[in-house]
Amino acid sequence: MGTIKAPRGKIPLSIIAILFCVFAFMALLYTERLSFLSSGSIFKFRPCAARYKMSKTDNKRSVNKQIDYAADDRFEFDPEECDIGHGKWVFNRSIKPLYSDRTCPYVDRQVSCVKNGRNDSDYRHWQWRPDDCMLPRFNPDIALKKLQGKRLMFVGDSLQRGQWQSFVCLVEHIIPKSQKSMKRGRVHSVFRAKEYNTTIEFYWAPFLVESNSDERIVGDPKKRILRVDSIAKHAKHWVDVDILVFNTYVWWMSGLKIKSLWGSFANGEEGSEELDAPVSYRIGLKTWANWVDSTIDPNTTRVFFTTMSPTHQRSEDWGNKNGIKCFNETKPILNKWHWGSGSDRRMMNVVASVVEKMKVPVTFINITQLSEYRIDAHSSIYTELQGQLLTDEQKADPLHNADCIHWCLPGVPDTWNQILFAHL
Image (cartoon, rainbow, N blue to C red; front, side, top):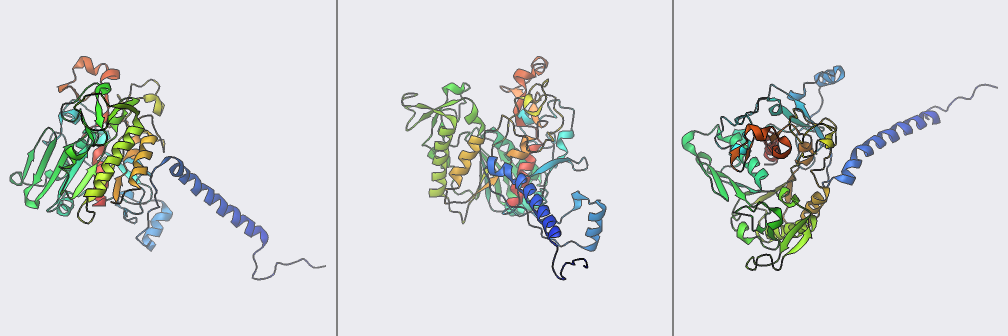
């Protein structure tokens, strides 16, 4: 009897089985990659679309694995498809910041780390590289042209003020001295680029809604009271702005409970109710969302929301048991998907659930995951306390004095603005 031959034109079952296993394994890998997003992230992303056909030259480069990623432009940034949160920090000393705290006169002393004695400089040379797409570099000339005749306003807390200062410093150095001006105020500050007829502004509203700590800061969190249903006092300053960039997070995290009030402050604490932070946060954000939906015309105004900026108060979070908060850290965390105790997923979920029900579209500047890695870039002991630079004695006590909330400038907020620039 002759051997049985497989019929021509048909694939043997063994090969089909192997192919099936290969595809199943690839699907498992893809599912594993997305599992973090489905369970932990509040945002829905799609992989970046390739906008470039690979040439023979590119193919050879790919085979040899010698791609120069810094010059690679095969993946065009698409704000609708690109996942900024997936990526890694890459060290590149050849890329220098567009400014320094010595050259830009608008950087607050609180975040002027070099001026305040920080000697290491590596933290200024890390670039955020998304996995699937190329984030365009910040171009001050193009940014100002896109803002021509417009008002850009950052609204929120001191972290948002840092992002505002970063944006101003990124563009101001190309503007002649006679064509720019800065007016600083306790609540509202305005940088003006006269030639472009544009303003880059900051409005102080740490909770977005009204509180008794808006102008005269109440140091004791237990004495702060929020009017969670009131925003008009602040919001009247946001009308007729072309691009609004909001944030609010860290002030809500100063304690387990927040004194929340409906109505006037006339009776002080009477009538206020202590609510869990996420509950009070949701009410406050709904008040903000209702104002946006009832006031903003999306045809004339774009609305952005900067997601929460991580704090790094526990060195145990990243495995440095002998560390003291972010003090003396000189490199980012390289463990992908690191998530520390300074970022509250409940608060992220509140933002997502409120925004997804809004009529006016809100674009997230998704900074949380990429900033989680940057334990090396905080002001640490190179800062001020109550308006005074830290003394040598205070610097010697980083446990009580290191600032692991705010970021050195130049630094991480420049990357936030790089993302904002990509969306403009």
